[in-house]
Length: 336
Ligand code: ADP
Ligand code: MN
Ligand code: MN
Ligand code: MN
Ligand code: MN
Image (cartoon, rainbow, N blue to C red; front, side, top):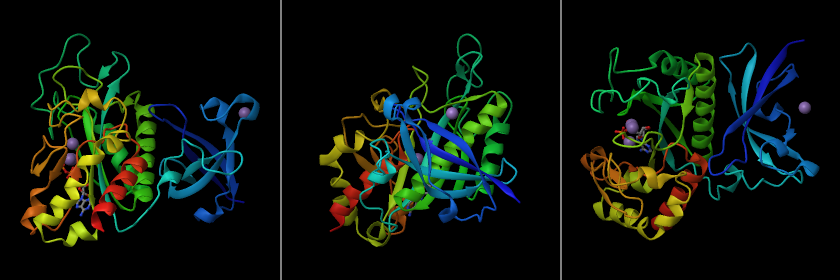
């Protein structure tokens, strides 16, 4: 009888930055279908999700991918439910009010590879700093790109798992990298980003390198990490009008706080107006403007105002479920 290894993945209850947890369930004669992944449970008192005297939390399978790192392995993304079967308060996915697959998302996930022996980014010397920013972005060569073996391995397993990665690149700071994932719908985009993060953690383990998701891990003149949210709906893809774009963009202005609340912890350290960001309390937009809150890509304008927008404010540690949900809410209100 064939036995499959199902790795159940969930988000714990740590705040302000939830971490990934997982455990393995062995299943006989697994069909490879999501509907044949059983519900499961875990000890919520060990993940800040339940008190010790009433510790059971439930895992509801919501997305399934093959696990290329393991013989007969599967990755099962799950939602956390309380013992009564209702979504747990830490379950951002269940709180997506309106998952409209007409909304397309391209998330650019930035992060640092982190050298635990010196507690600094990969490529930093033991004391002091490497050469200032400039040569690292999209770099090639010894002394410029650090950890390529790790990010190549991650890319391969993401693609083998069926995640819709659209590209990768070295970023502006030393040891900083990015991958992009495109998906239709908030839940699918969020599922894929979380599973890609999970696989990166696993690759890091094997190489003795940590993954730093914090948005500003190195103080000073070093870029922070974002998770730019590129988005579109039929309206934006077909508008053909600058005025329609401005109406959508202006609808973000009165709800700055609602967006920033879910755009990731410690974002004030990153959204300073420097290092290709706008200040956290200012809202602005502009064509090709990487110092704006929302950039209008030049291709959108060249195609006659048909395309997408890039909200540059979400950070590397944000929950993509929550980011996508609030963008859908704001754009939908303006699309009426
Ligand atoms: P940047 O120039 O900001 O580094 P990237 O090439 O890294 O841009 O990322 C751009 C992202 O925009 C890609 O992930 C891509 O999938 C996404 N994208 C392109 N067209 C659309 C669209 N119509 N709707 C949503 N996302 C889109
Ligand atoms: Mn036990
Ligand atoms: Mn990018
Ligand atoms: Mn980037
Ligand atoms: Mn970008």
